[in-house]
Image (cartoon, rainbow, N blue to C red; front, side, top):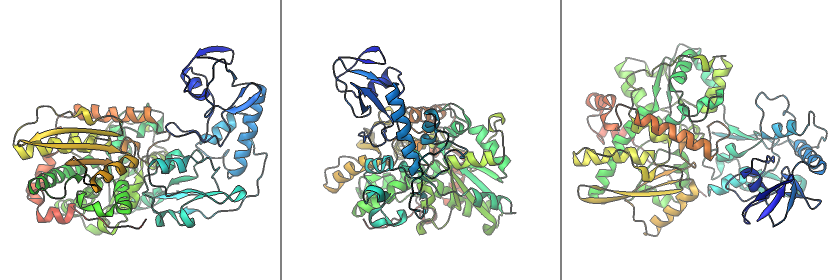
Length: 559
């Protein structure tokens, strides 16, 4: 069909909205409550356009043959401005003094608002200072994006409560997030356009400990190197590994190590665990355990299936365990003087290090965004830094460790090692393209010792539910399953730069696969530092010492 937008005739499909067609034709319409991949709620009315002298929300209005649309009429601009002013009245009055503008602030400036005209008498809410995520209803404009994100994750920890003037977003019964089924994935945080949800900030803690005489070391997750540059106006998907390491040295860390070392260690243990379970035909399918958001989800909603979860700790916790045992012994460091800091793309890692099962192996977690803020606080000129290398031995890693940050990467890394350690043969093709990319559900199979092993990869917790239902109903055909809580994997974690959309996620993901391909060593069990660790310390995968330090158990939680 044909419609007209701003006097331009456009051909389009009948199932599209006005906003869809405008985007396809590079016609800008501002949006706030709208999110790609979600049903439009038409709450904010920022995207209004004029059709037949009526103002309609472009996000939810379907096109019709001969429709004439104006996105910039006087009527539209006035309505857009006053709707923005009304939203601003709900928001705490910091928009024009914050150092980094959020979405509402940018829209306000674009429509010509320089001060808040309407002053709503608003109840002052207590700020929920959770273990990992903080929510501030004083900043909330009730756009509903966080609620949609939580529903999409199939967690439903938060929703609207009360009516009219008293409406607020809260967990059930106004409980705190830490007392709810929240899994700390941070997808609500990425969705919030007004910074009403943000991570618990540990920058002051880290700055304080860096000023002491303690031996402070830091590890960085694979996903961080592919996204940190965005905070310094570097294109998404640019690897900034060398500059990241250089900035951490300037900040004062004694040693800069790589969580990819921990990933290689995880794979070595996890592959051995998989092979053992396959031999015994016990607790299959085995499900990966490196995502703390996913672990908390199964603890809340499917605790009866916990026996299927790998007992391996996550890579950064494995690293912490090694740092506080092997590392201090090898380099004669007093354990009381060692502080381990993790730089993670994930908000759930802040919760994970508080778990009793993890025995405080990691002391502090900073998100990618927090690291960027820390670098800026210290006035380090990130873009001008010369590349530097990780320290050895815990900074050595394989390409398999790199791809941990992408959905499918853990599975691919594990299969490379499981095949070779089980068969004693070289795997000819290292790429498992069938489980790469951003599809919700990916699957494949591999023959190991004449047995066909079926595997699957899911990302996003709504997809995890589907496969858990299959296991529960004994209809699951898979032997090995990877689950990541965040869509696209860690690369789209709640601690990553904002915006994090599909295009940006794909670019970050591609960077990790390129990094893997360029690595001299691409299999975890061939990492010389891992080989040395087993020779000097563990003896073999799944040894008594390895089970004690590198493996854990999980608990049933209420719903």
